[in-house]
Amino acid sequence: MSVLSHQYARIILSYIIGLFFATVMSIRALWYIIRNPNDAFYNKDRKEMPSCLTDESLGTHGYIHLENVRLHYVVNGEEDKPLMLLLHGFPEFWYSWRHQLREFSKDYRVVAVDQRGYSDSDKPSGINSYKIANMVDDVKQLIPALGYRSCVLVGHDWGGAISWMFAARHPDMVDKLIIMNCPHPAVFRKYMSSHLAQFKKSWYMFLFLIPFIPEFYFRMTDYKMLNATFRSKRMGVVDKSKMTDEDMEAYKYAFSRPGCDTGSINYIRAMFHNKATRADFQKITNPTLLIWGCQDGALEKGMAPLAQPLVENLTIEYVEDASHWVQMDRPDRVNKLMKQFLTADN
Image (cartoon, rainbow, N blue to C red; front, side):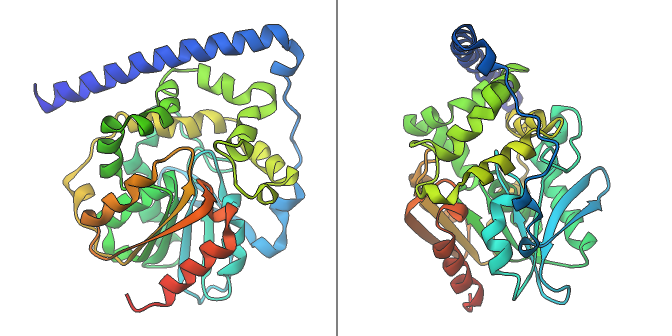
């Protein structure tokens, strides 16, 4: 079987699995609607930005125009400091880096960006707009647009996947690389296909391939899925005080922006169509720190050390009592690990 035929077969199989999960979730949603018709379709009107998003201690808001997209960001720290660029994951936005925006603004110009498709950034139409190569190119354009040649690149979850690939393709634009709870993309592909535990944790990716149904489920009952994502026992933060009611309102405000649900889900839809290049598998030469919250309901810890052969200079730090949302769950521990890595002679 040719490489192209194998790819098509994989995509078709993924859609079949997605249809199965879509059918199951549709039945569950229909049953909930029958029992709770008022709750199921209720969404709070969120026109006003929650006050936590305008907290001046986090920085100032701005927009930057790239070649094909306008991105929203929050920046903290003086312009003469080195750049630290923070890339969030799914379903997040710049606010996931609130603890790092404050902590590192003394030594860096810290920029937390809303990636394309999220919150107040542009949301291009079409799944192809969200292929990972486009986000890598966004970062390539963003760094000089901010007035820099390189940065300390920090990525979590999907932001981590983009950061891995950016460092492989553009090592000269990365001073140091910090990844949080995200396996190397080459590791994830193989691991999910050979480890049932990870396949079960990744079921939602197949559901998201189906149009419309994931968006409806996402919005149901006033974005109840976000509550489950950040507060449930299986997936939520370990330290419940780190995700307050106001924090939850901030996330619901961000995802109630028109098109944010589809834009963010399109990252996963596009994943099944991404074509890896030889550059994506080049050994990363930049000093790299991988931080892993061990109570991760989405990703198996066993993937972390498998990045070792793909990175020339890799440090792995485990945070045992942290969830997938490690930078929010244990900010003091994460910030300390980041500082130690950034000040070390790697």
